[in-house]
Length: 424
Image 1: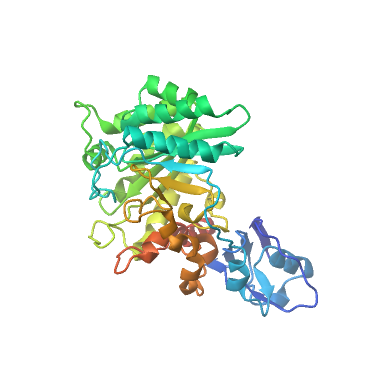
Image 2: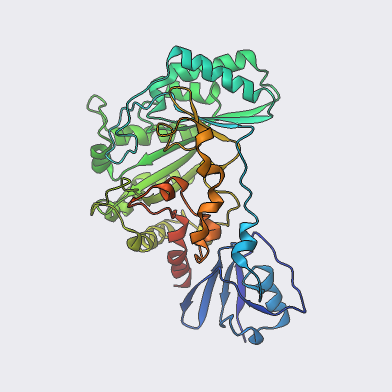
């Protein structure tokens, strides 16, 4: 008897056409374990367990074939799958922003060795720029039903007064009663305290915080290199994450790993395990990006990333935090933040940009054509099985000449490890 079990339904359901000849999808990624095959289809997000090679379609019953077709594992023989999926991507120019990433300063109380802003001239919004930015925001949000103020840096908590000024002026000049609005923040969290957290939640409508940990306590403190009058930056961050979680703020915790700290991942997880009890806690362990033009031995190269994620997900699965099936990504229909039609980055001098990595390198977003026209740059992805879950990856990295960085994103490297783990 042939075993065929759909472990997860696909995001895009396909119709069964009785008069059509079907073949296996190009976007099937497969792991064989004994008599069983585990297959993930990157174009639908469906996951399959079967005891037969789906190349031998005649071995399956009609009902089983319908399941394979419905979830994208089989496609009509003459399907141009790249073109078919590519047609779902609809890039548009930035016409009506509603997600505003505001950079009040590029200054920071941390000195992370890997920061891409390290060589930037430190800028902080002037009083006039704060006024101009506030006017721009009011003009754009008065006719929209919902919007997000996304505070970024540098370390945005160095500019609490600027954030207060912008939000209070918006509240005074725009009727927010019928609007859904919120704030998010990217921060090292060391400058938070109970009073500031209360202010952020109540007055800034803070709903999510993006925070990074760089290793176990000693390693994190060395890498962050934050002066807190003898206090541990790691403990400060951990304590404030706990307070934010208690206030129902969504925490997106990124763990940066390289060859010098990857073996400490179990210990890092043990130090944050109490957070797993919170539904509003989300973990994102990943590799540390190298500088644009220099790859030292400390950084994890592309060939080592699948092994890294195998180890990561194996550890997380043992803790009970991570469900392996739920860890598989779904296919995407839009690219990165910079390519979305409703996003804009506001730099410390008030200029508008598409990408947080380029706000000092381009004059304004009207010169960021590559983000509007990025589909034309991913022709080289035609032969990549992972295209639907990556969409060409990072436009900024792809545009760099001579870079050591790959444009491919995390999704590209987690599929094989996850298939391997569910097959064990």
